[in-house]
Image 1 (cartoon, rainbow, N blue to C red):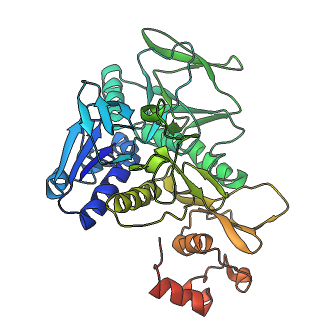
Image 2 (cartoon, helix red, strand yellow):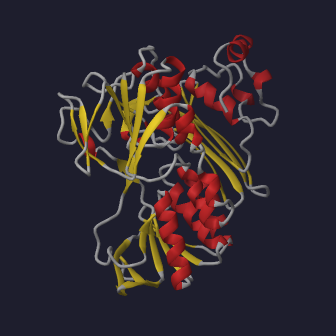
Image 3 (cartoon, helix red, strand yellow):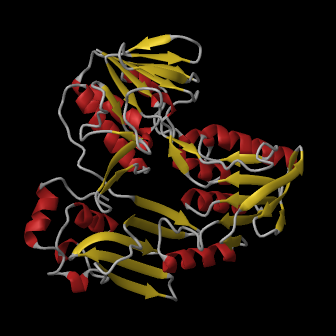
Length: 424
């Protein structure tokens, strides 16, 4: 059996491990346009801040490939796919044939086409090479002021890293508040206050219309005409699924690659997993990319099993983000700020401790949650969402300090202990 995997991040690693659990002899080849061993993309902001060394972002060492008998072609892009004859063409012209193919090409950072976009000192920040380029630029030009465009999680972790490097940072967000896709207004406000305390300028309801400079960045002009002097601009608007490889094929796509419950595309023997694939969002009730690390691993593992002939189904996931911002641990999951009379919310807020908790309910089922500065027992809430547990019998205790496993119905506790276990 010839297994080929395009991409070398978490979904690819999970697929390799799953394949090897069931097929010790099949040939596995990983192809990636990046020249590195698998690394943790969420850690690159920590490396920029100096919290960790670059060496520690690799979550599988080079021996992983040898131990699992995996051949690699790294630093070479796969440019086209022939689904009929089952081969991949590489940028250097080589053809790679396969029996089973996994596409785990991840996402591409969104970068608006505005004047000055090509100036030296304009970056996106999602890859290891971005980290290297940004570090080199900071050292070379002694960067003191930076504009970060985008007030989502990637943007805010970037902002925090830059402030730790003693830079003056302005964050520009088009929406009326930061983290509008992840948190509600209350949570956004708490985090925005923390950003301002560390010296960050937060500008919402605005965006960059032009970047100025002679050769390299010297300022940005906002859509309202305001000018902000800066030495560097980082776009952190988000990512879009990297479906370039399948654009001119018969593989069906929407925003991402459409797959079934086995992570297989509409073309037999071709699978997709991770940020490039569309999976069922259990809380929204729609199929869409769920671009989070644990979900990518799970999808990759399920794809790997099915590629090796072991039937496994992906039953869906939820959007869940766990991140620490300005020393505030935060978690959001599911629908955090839905509109409609069918939703009910339960909230707790302690201004002195900056603790905020919120549960979103629909027909007594939890469909979303927010935790700021107290993330205890988040795994329990996640399982209640996934398992669609009716919480009416313990609803009044759901945000109490003493809420825990003992608060749950006896039969459900037994399910967690003897069944799939508690995910945290």
